Image (cartoon, rainbow, N blue to C red; front, side):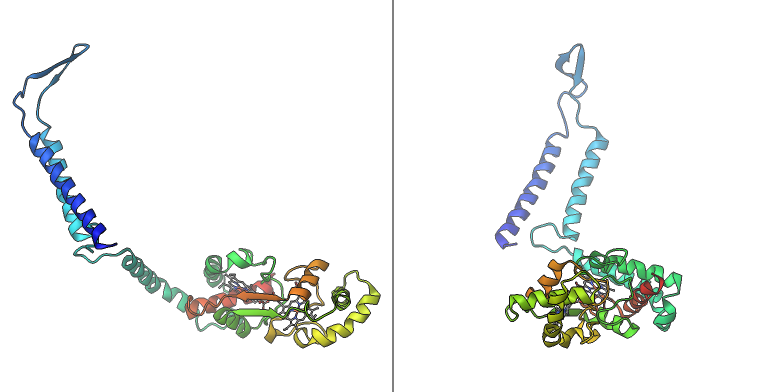
Length: 292
Ligand code: HEC
Ligand code: HEC
């Protein structure tokens, strides 16, 4: 706030205090105590008495409280208050207190290997809450994913399903990049390779196109998806031979991937979540495909 507006707020507030005090003092006494004002409404008359004592005391109390509050806490323009309180400071203190309180809860599992931890119901209840707070907005609260967001419940992994691979995914994030082939392939080649993908994923396809598509696939796609098209974990490329799709089995999505490519981002959590929380999440995600 500029110093002009700061001074504006301070002066207006001070004037309000002075005026209210003056008003109270001015009405402290009346010359006509015990007499009526002379007004009469349907026979009901009005005394001209001073304000009741208890009410005045309360009013003075609120003025004293108001002044004390504005000295202690921020409120008078840019004046920060003598206590140094800020909402950010309070938030950080509460977060630190929560961290100190809950950290031991998470830490108790840090030595349990992922392969055992996922069977611990108590730990997995905790992990489910961490998942709900941080992961469900993209992967769904049931972790079954959505268009472009992988299903974590099945046993099909684009980046690998070992505890180490899952931990790496969570800590560093992942960026699945498929280069666009529209500018490079002819329209015929696109038709052919799309038919080939339909064939190897067990869908209806044009056999003649698919046959020609195999050569296109080997030249342009096998480097990332593997010659057998089952995907390469290190590149995050998907298995094209199964019935599990990140986008969809329909021809339009296969064609779109080929022509426009894909660029998909899983955010990194290493900076936001403690190691112990990530350990719990790793076990949770690992366990999802085991139970389901
Ligand atoms: C902003 C959306 C978003 C959030 C939030 C998110 N993810 Fe992801 N996640 C993705 C996307 C997109 C991918 C696919 C990345 C790719 O393959 O290019 C992915 C991939 C993954 C994978 C790899 C799956 C595979 O098949 O290899 C795992 C595991 C995963 N996420 C776990 C998590 C966990 C645990 C959290 C919570 C800490 C989380 N994700 C939060 C978007 C998100
Ligand atoms: C540079 C590596 C790379 C190349 C080359 C590549 N892809 Fe991909 N492809 C990927 C990655 C990575 C993904 C996953 C993208 C994501 O996470 O969104 C993918 C996804 C796909 C999908 C989406 C599958 C689904 O589950 O919805 C299709 C279809 C596909 N690729 C087909 C092809 C075809 C056909 C070619 C050859 C013309 C090809 N790709 C070449 C890396 C590649």
